[in-house]
Image 1 (cartoon, helix red, strand yellow):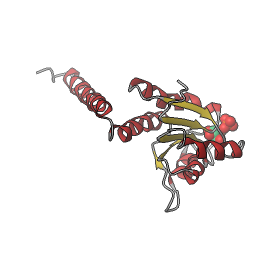
Image 2 (spheres, rainbow, N blue to C red):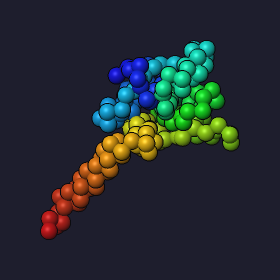
Image 3 (cartoon, protein in one colour):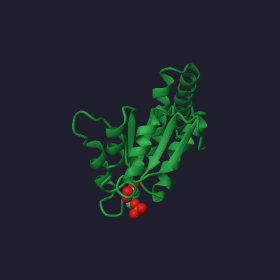
Image 4 (cartoon, rainbow, N blue to C red):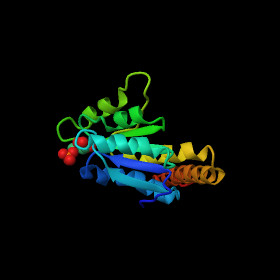
Amino acid sequence: MNESNAMVAIVMGSKSDWEIMSETAKVLADFGVPHEQHVISAHRTPERAVEYAHAAKPRGIKILVAGAGKAAHLPGVLAALTTLPVIGVPMQTSDLGGLDSLLSIVQMPGGIPVATTAIGKSGAKNAGLLAVAILALNDQVLDAKLTEFRAKMATQVEEDDRSLPGNDC
Ligand code: RP5
């Protein structure tokens, strides 16, 4: 989905991040949240990053989800350029396993926040769910969907528990 009426923008530093960041897109699609996705690099295309961050709010974007790896400055750079909430997703990396990305994103100095998720797929999925939760504050339909999603997860856990040997009563 790449919509001009997008409410959430998924931005990633490299096409190589898409395999992970598509998890965010999947969640947003499941919840029916209009979104768009772009590859924009804070160091390879810095001017584009500035232009995109400045235009996001006037275009109607409500939340930015930014995935990046290694010296992962994209989420912080975007957060510096807009007052929209920014959720950062640290990519797993070959050299330091993603700890490099995590610390680069999570350790923002006071004043410019980036809400940081877990490394990799779980983080990308949770970024989508966090974006949904923020939007649900002003959207009862979305809020009901989120409640239903949580209830389904709880039911699944109960079923899993009953499926273990000796727990079928
Ligand atoms: C970051 O560098 C990207 O977010 C990516 O995770 C990492 C490696 O990028 P590629 O060399 O795979 O393009 O900018």
